[in-house]
Length: 267
Image 1 (tube, rainbow, N blue to C red):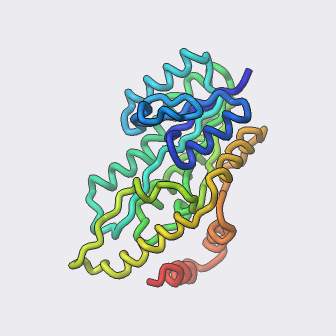
Image 2 (cartoon, rainbow, N blue to C red):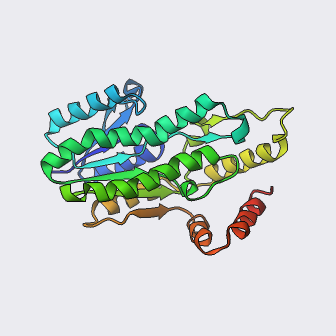
């Protein structure tokens, strides 16, 4: 019997690539979208799910379990970008980002654990970000939400080991997707003290995404994690220098690393 996989945020970008790749490999794949009816050409089944709505999460997961009788792999992929000077980002937008990137995955995990305990098996993969390993200028809220999910995974793994349920983080770098179009951008204000550095950094971030890696690399990475008997805690997928930046953060003095980042962003 093929494994049943749930991928949140499966209608576009990395989630769509994962779903198509795993479907081709013989998995029974369910993706989610807030508006699945818009994606009539999806190559795998899409169900309605909003990660910021716990009722929506419960309804979707129960429907999948009722249909298949099990749930083997959950990929917490749904996420949202956010940019801007922290001082100028409205509090409501900060909270909304954490609802999607942090509380959403936690609530999905809470909803699937009872079924996985019944099965005495399961794998949960949280899609975080290389940005979650460091506080990046004008991406501080995004870094914080993804970094929080990295740490929660470390704790969760130890709590669920007795139930034969595994969990891992997969942190992508920049990939060529439509994430830039969907993220919240604090406006570049003419009267803002951050106008020039934020405007330049925003332009650089968008260029990095446009020139990013093929999402198929993430799909293959997820496939490999699923087929690993005892997955690691942390995986990184992306450009060599993006992954190496995490190593540098561990070995360099804090202020040296900070200067390196500021030079990179021309600040």
